[in-house]
Image (tube, rainbow, N blue to C red; front, side, top):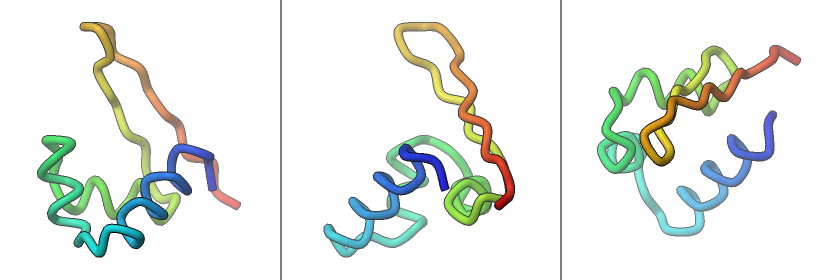
Length: 59
């Protein structure tokens, strides 16, 4: 699990948020977030107008 994935999951649990709420805040589909959190996909994020890809590597 990547550090980003772990941090997102920990914050979700700590704040008692659903995957849907987190996905809505990230402006992505819930299934996309679920795949990212379970190491089955990748998440493309735009930071300062540039796309940054966070690749998830299977265990």
